[in-house]
Length: 263
Image 1 (tube, rainbow, N blue to C red):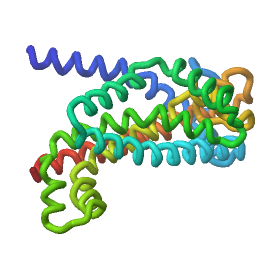
Image 2: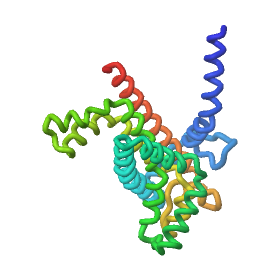
Image 3: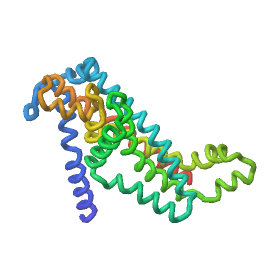
Image 4: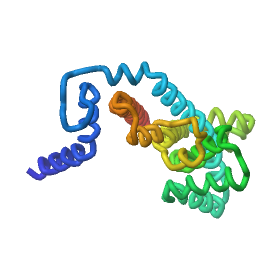
């Protein structure tokens, strides 16, 4: 009975978390124009999603921004984590603390600060996309750092020196010894960086060009007067993103399980 109680509680929690998304997915396969009334089955929302030039350009731009900022974040975050790992304890503690502050800091504060520093102080032009990329990179780097650091701590610290003693050059020792050891952390950081970029609203709002929209800013603006077919197509977009993330998480967990068995 106690075990059944735990299982029931788990199901209630999962239902509370995922019921809104599941309801949205159901409505995405109907021709309903508003929530509350489910009408006939239809794929019009998905047809609009993949054929509308406005939505297609917005989605492509969003993922292009996410990938570019994620790649830069992985390079900076991984380099910072490796540098801190092989530094003295005081430097390592400072780096850990510095990377935790942006994580717990309010997103709106980070976005507004980046806007003031880049656009007002440094006089960068928002039309160049540079402030937007920098803003998303600043948001993501600490999460990459915090994803890579645990993998470094699980690794034998002497591996790098052992590779050098065996004749490997520093760059070869890094790429062939250290990077393979921390690859799961790098992959997790990359996925996290993409997710943060897709989800961010405040930093994007403060730093994006006036003619550019990401999924988050577009969805917010779409609730203020977009066409009905565009609004309902966003239900389909939410469903597609949720399915992609679910599949990615599943395969990451499968890979982690295989890694543990091999160890």
